[in-house]
Structure formats: structure tokens, C-alpha cells
Image 1 (cartoon, rainbow, N blue to C red):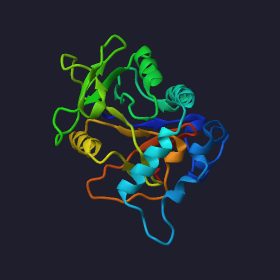
Image 2: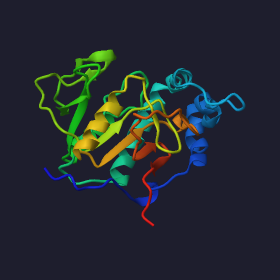
Image 3: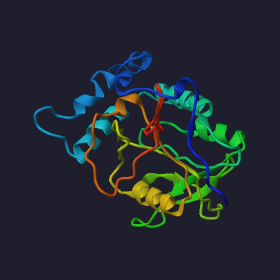
Image 4: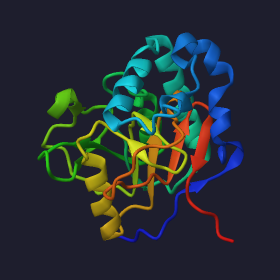
Length: 240
């Protein structure tokens, strides 16, 4: 299979900058969940907060989003994704099934399936190994997997994704992603990039999950782009 494709972002969603994450209509809809500028998660004068401290703060904040707002943002993300991300019909796309307050991807999953894309979901086969992606359709009966996730059963076909769409707790202005600490996506994306299998690694989040800077580690796999209810931003350097 030929993977010489690139993640193409176009239209009015093609760029946002960090300051625009702090304002807009969703601040009113989400009330206190976005009262404080996300960059305040970094403690001025005390250096950068630890990943675990940031995880707890961002989890608490994300949990405060109401079910109604979570559903509304999920539908908006699905609409934005189809407008902004230009990919061939036969692209194999890995998307996550939402858990524990993550941005709801179910509307996006259904829209991608209707558009003819092959949708695969992550499954954990081994705690120290890359994720395995299994094909999803609306007819698949999900089963409980590791860490309380829902995933396709093992009899579903395995697929190698060309575009990986990942959940996150936080993202900084350079594309570092803060996950739950298991390293699953870092291991997986590192392996896929080494094989030349994927042309894009994209995060989905609420705009308040943006922080100025995250603690970086050598094994971190940087995102190519991130999408929130404010739009989509590409971290890739444009050619001079």
C-alpha cells in the first residue's frame, strides 16, 4: 500500500493561535470550566508543574463539562473535521472511543463511516506494546477492554491506520501531547512513523486543554495538528 500522502488542512479552520483559545462563545456555554486561562496551569515563579499535577487539574476541569455541551462540541468537531481535513475516501483512520469525559467522537465516527473511510479503533493487547487497531462499523458490538475502554472485539479485522486521531488531557503550543501516562500513543506512533505507515497524527480536545508548555521527554511523539471547538492548528513547519 502506498502512503505518500500528507495531512492537508484547508479553509477557514486552517490556523488558530494560542490566544484565541481563551475566548469565544464556548466560554459562555461551558461556564466555570473555562474561567481560568489554560496557561495558568503553569505555575509562574515555581517552574513547570509536573505531568501528574497537570493531569489531575485537566481531568477535573474536563469532568466539569456538562453532557449537553459534550454532545454539542462532539457534533461541531465532526462538522469541522470533514471541512478542514482533506483526505482520500479510502483512508484508514484511527479514532478513539470516548471515555471519562474525553471529547465525544461518536458523531465523527459515524460521519467518517458514511463518507466511506475505513475507521479503526485502538485496542490494548499488551501494556508495553503498541496499540492494535481493529475495524469499526456502526454494527459492531463493543466490548470492555483495558482501563475501562470500549473497543471492537478480537474477531474484528485489524487495520493499519494512515491517520491517527488521539485523545489527550493537554497539548502545548509546540505539539507536545499530555496523555494518561501509559505511553501507548507514543509507542504506537513511533512504530507507525518508523514504518512510514501514517501521514498524520492529530489530537482532539477542548480549547481549555491548551497549555503554554508541557514537560518534554525524549520518547514524546509530537502531534502534527490539534483540533478543538475553536478550529484546527497545524504544528508542521511551512516550507520557506
